[in-house]
Length: 119
Image (cartoon, rainbow, N blue to C red; front, top):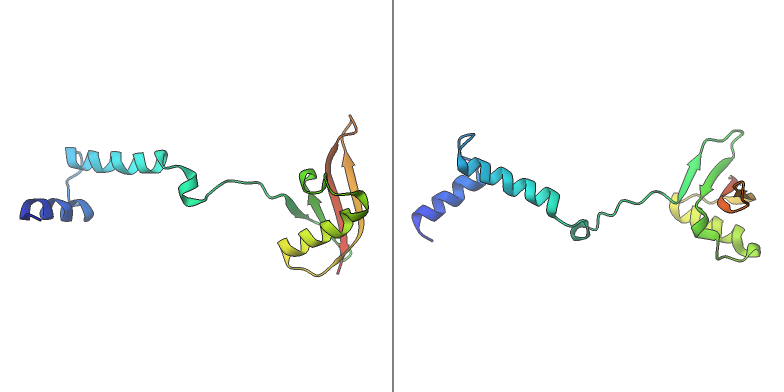
């Protein structure tokens, strides 16, 4: 590597250019391009809403909201055990569901499930 390019690389890495110079503007443009043009898949950073949410409860019990997609294909007889398994994996709590309630909207479509648990 020649002395000029090594010096230029060193100045680039150490950000040794005066503000408002063309070199400074190029570095800022490269950083902005990286931030805005890099695909999320490169970092496996996919925004995803939580599909199981713990809600406030009383009397030492726990209430969890479960998105409908997680239990819709599960037969009704197996929903409680599947919901328990998912909650235990997510929150690492050994509890039993004493009531699993299906939440419907006005058109009688499933909007989610409420799992009521006790330690």
